[in-house]
Image (cartoon, rainbow, N blue to C red; front, side):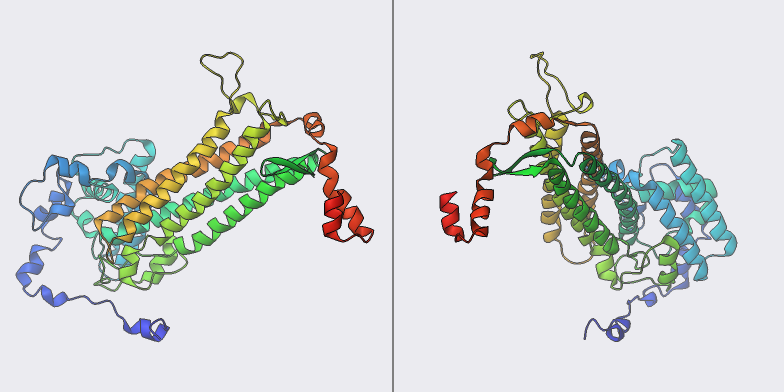
Length: 431
């Protein structure tokens, strides 16, 4: 019953406007106080330490706490979310139309600076959110201080990550589609090549080279399908729930979700800011994808060796030795195999980080982005490298055929005897 829509609708987000009771307090935090708001634009201003903090931060703590070194790659998503959020504040009557326009125009100017490579990070830019807001306020003045009304970095950052990962999954899908098409085309053209099939790395039965190729095409298809399934849970909006207890001004989250292209909103505000399942699911899916890449690479490392000689790898995906002139090493494939461990490690590391956190947002969750970014970059590079290897390798059907021998047909002999009425166990013994 807890999950019935009627019950959910009763679990309203709680906010306590009565905590601010005096008009003097309200005026103190009003955006009309230009001196207060304009301090945002001062060099070294730290948004997260305004208000109650008066002492200086240990410089080592500032460096330890900052995430701008890696979360700056979400500059586009952060600005996209803020442009939509400004519109949501306008719809809620919290901003005048001219203020919405000023904020959005200013944000587009910040976006242009990032695109042109002219955006300048400054001391006090703790993360991408504070950096963009600081620069916005420098450009448009005190009205920039209104952008964060009702918004917390707790719901802002996870929105940015979802926007970023949504784009990344779309790009990965394109690369998987190209890889699968490449392998499928080769399988059709080279369908007459016969080779040994192996179990336990021992010659087992004859198979087609195309059959081996399609073995991995099917695995990669499942990888792409898993990404599509993860996308469904990535594409839900957390923005508009504040730090944890809901938005104090009741913005239209459904409209905000539509503006940003999300399929819906996350219903529980505590879950919205604390959920990192979608990242873990991506890392789990990516880890399994890399296991498939590793097995593909291992097969080709063996098949390209002198002992097998079934394929020849293109020079573009091979390297030499600094000492031995005759060597041609399958480094691209060895790196595909090796990087699988890296991706699996990122997944395990984040699982361990998340498992000890209490509900809602905790600073531990800042550790979600580096493993996510690294795993996504690794997976995207590996899919493209696998595509290059698959497109350029040269099969050697003569070597494949030479590796076939009569003992590999003993299973066919036992099958023949079965067709003649001999019990299978006896046929197996005779063959």
